[in-house]
Image (cartoon, rainbow, N blue to C red; front, top):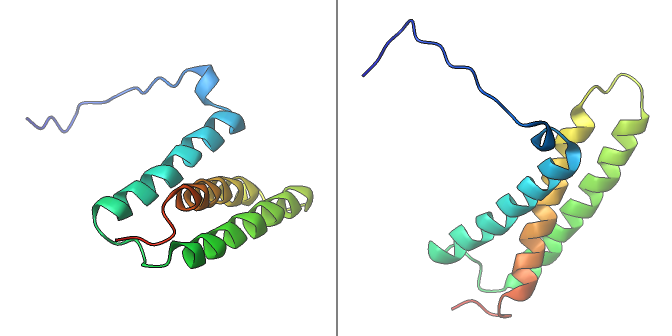
Length: 103
């Protein structure tokens, strides 16, 4: 059923409008990304190499986010960089917990 004139008001509780919550959310997304790749058979045969690559991206992303936060005129770009770093770090941690060689 489609009602073109209908409107929706979204309520977001205050405890979900903060950086620590968003970091936990993106952390969960990174773990989920890895699990989807396992289920779909897209995990590379050598997980260690992928883990290093993603961990490096997470660390540089976090450093970049900190730098952007300090610079004037960058707006909220640092938030996107920090959240992507959290997602990448969680993915690399999921790789670390996986067997060294995928099936």
